[in-house]
Image (cartoon, rainbow, N blue to C red; front, side):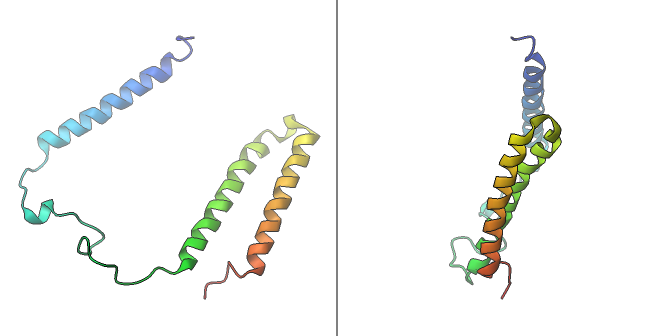
Length: 118
């Protein structure tokens, strides 16, 4: 069992070693001139802990959720397409049901105007 996973173990050790080396070198070779403005948290050019200047439209969140939904659809579709010939008719029917449900959701979002930026 250990022989088959030895390469993965070596990769984890190498990745940890390189990460540790970079952290060490950053600490040793990096500039060390702290002052008040460098120690202050930086948040997108705004003063930290200040109230937001504007409101985000709900449309931004809707577009983000639609993007995630389309991403998940592609995550399921790509592996199925790669091994399509070996899976047979039942996998084809299952994928068509999945795509049909996805298309129903797409049509619903379209009818509700989710894809129109106002």
